[in-house]
Image (cartoon, rainbow, N blue to C red; front, side):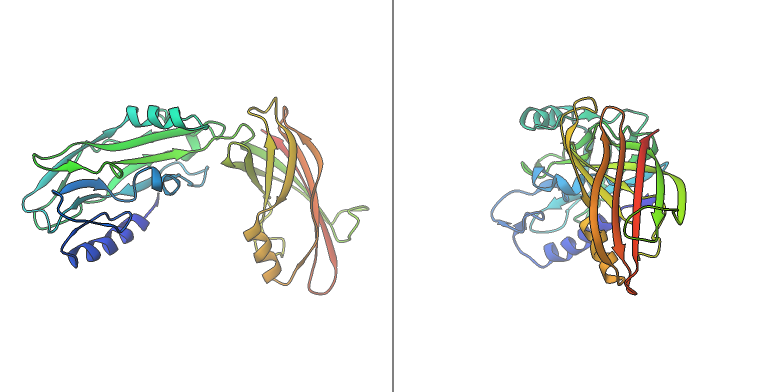
Length: 305
C-alpha cells in the first residue's frame, strides 16, 4: 500500500504556526482572520487547492490511500472534544461541473472507498487524526474523469465551517487515449535507424493522462543506459479516440534533463511515424548521442490492448 504522508507533514507545520499566533489564521492562505468565532476546515482543501487533490498513484497499484486532516481554527486549541461529520458531497461535484469544461463523474464504488463518517479533534488539540480516502488505481478507467468531493457536513454547536476550505476535491482526469498499451521497442546503434537493429523487445505499458488532450506513454524498457526512463508526451485535439487529430509528440522535459545530466545529447527529438487515434496506435522515433559520440536511434510502436 502506498501512502501520501505530505499532508501529515504539512499539518504538523501548520500546528506549530497556529500555536504561535494569537489570532485565528486561515491555514491555507496564511491570512490572519481577526475577531471571528472558531471554525472548522479541511487542510489543503478548496478550489484553490484543487490541483493538489489530484490522485496520481501508479495505475497498476491494487490499493492506495490519500490522507487529509480536519483543523479547528481558533485563537487556541479545542476546549473540549470536537466531533465533525464528514461525507461525500454530491452538491460540490455538481457545482464544480457547472463551472468547468472538464466534467467529472463520481468514482464508481469499485474504485474508491470512504467510510469515515466523523472525526474528533480532542480537547487541547487543533487537528484531527489522519482521515483516509482509499482508491484502487488498477480498477479505474483512465479514459474517464472521476471526482469524490468530501466535505464537513456537521459541526458542534457554535462552530462554523470555512466557506473556502470545507471541501477537498479528490479527482482523476480522464483521457480518451489513455490506458494499457503494448510497446514494441526497436533500437539501432546508428543515426539512421536502418539496418539490423541491436534490440527488439515488447513490453506492456500504460498511457497516463495529463489532461483531457495530453497523455504520456512511458517506454517500457527502462533506462537503456540513458540514466532514466523516459516518457513521450502526446497531445491532440478532439474529445474522443474517434475524433482525435492534430497529434504532436515530444519528450517529458524532466526526462530530457536527466538524459542530458547522464552525459547524452539529444540527437533528434521524437517525430511521428504513425498516429492513429481511432485505433489508438502510435509509432515514434528519436535519437541520442552518447558521451563517446556514438549515435543511438529508438522507435517505439504502441498498440492499445
